[in-house]
Image (cartoon, rainbow, N blue to C red; front, side, top):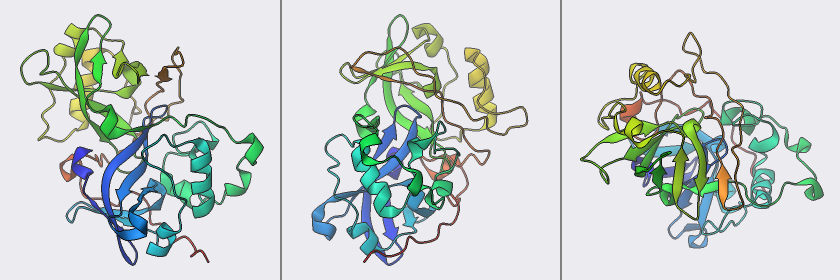
Length: 303
């Protein structure tokens, strides 16, 4: 995902700015927002852009195209991206754009797998009233913050999180790219977030139910090659873990399962479903240039 930083973000009538970060939901391991630096526009503030707003992603020109106008983005709620984003902030954001809340059901995107379906679902009337609105931590973490977190095995630490690999249709994070060169020479491995038991923000660690030796011996990931089903099968076979895709290659939707945590640790859920398109997010080499989602009708202009 680091390669997507500095991608241009284009409204239907102008350039909004450039991507500087991503906010990742640590319960469903799904990318919820781009953090966009608007430069001198909109008072110089950063804005959040949900995958529900994506019209297409153009890998060749390194740009996200939005089903929004500049005026719509300009009028969006002012959310401080330097502090944790709360459910109240998200609720105001969804109300403004007319989006349904992704937390309204157990799936990664409400009752579905794809953010584009929520964008036009018209379910905002079913959102909780203000006094019923969930409050507190929305479990949104900066991707740039999580990079550098140590991977803690059952017996020892095993490198650090270097990056993420995600699907460009569901925007679910399928793998943590773990650099083990802190402990032995120059190897990167992939670890599925569903194999993690918890994330400790104070300790800056991701805990996994795997030994150091098991991770050390896992199939090496070559960052210049695509992540394909053959590699995934080899990875899952090595760790003896059930695959997330169905018997015919179709995704199986997983329900979140929360680990035991205390107030300083965040729960880790089952990995969100992926698609069979293998549109991997980090660079175009992880999948053919695709739409990144269905065509979206522009949101009506706000007065």
